[in-house]
Length: 490
Picture: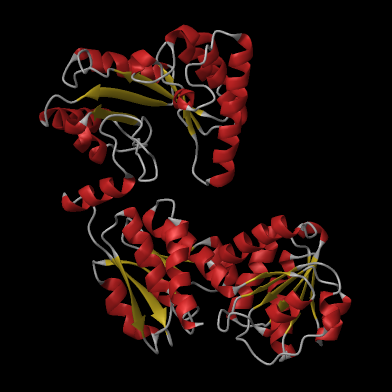
């Protein structure tokens, strides 16, 4: 968040920040923008106030207000606070609380900060003395300046002592492509770049791919039947939006043995796993995440840097995210104070149980037509809950007055008693064919909040994309791709 750029707003254009009342109003305005950003994005916030001599818009005469805004950013919980190297930087560094301080030096003209000179090393040392991360910005006169910048980074950057080093201007764009951490980027939705030469994350990934720094990988959906799965549309939209050169395709097999050549291929980038392979795939993997281990099922394969294959589960994360959002919107009881019902006792119900445990639900009942399977599942997961019971009938389940119901079976002619929805609640169905399952139809008639299976599919897919790419997934393009395919078929 560039607080100085907020001075371009209609309310504060040309404002006299030396006036105490105006300064107070501007601080409140910045706080509102910070809160809106926090509410609308899952990304960490980098907060800064760039002055005019630093290439920004904040008047240098309002230095007291600048320092006040930087201290306020720490109090508001900004993950990073970017401050120019000066006497205030050390003070802010000492009082940074949970924020990380980026100690910066900007030379917009590129006259003093040359990457092969002693001054660059001097400023790096000063930055490290008053910041968690050093940031040095020069300006490129020629393409060779990018190569010198890269050599400087190679000499001084490490995960323990991170350095942001780049050149501004059109000629300096390659330094942004090669910058190892926290590269400032622009976005197509912004009316203008915040600094000369800024490019988007998508452009950076595309350039890294062309340079051979980001090899194309092949991702798959393993399972059967999967011909109509929206997963390829979802993940290919995600890769395209991020500028990644990868592809996602279907690999339909009846047995996991047929997948061995696929996962051994050097181009293998990862996979989503669906029925019937979520458990049989496990012996082919090197290790599991704690969540996948406890659930006993894998729906995501992630190749690690050391060449091993990690099994994970994002089904439960999809359920957690959707139920949390529905609970906030519907104002249903807090999870710790409510009981829940799971309909079904198959593989998906395992992820549902772990999701309810993650949310803090203490009392859960399982209903399944084959009661023996429900009892076996309840015994396996009993330690996660204060109470985990088996409802022999749906009428028994209704007597428990669940506030949350999770359906984990394919849509069927299941007859749901009206008393099951006696009190307000949320019904989530993992099945997404048809759009309105019997569970969701019955819940909707009783004015319950409902979560469609396709919504859970998108949510868990977003988590898959982030685990594969290491980037924040473009949720809207991915969701739109799924819904376009889904709406054309259902």
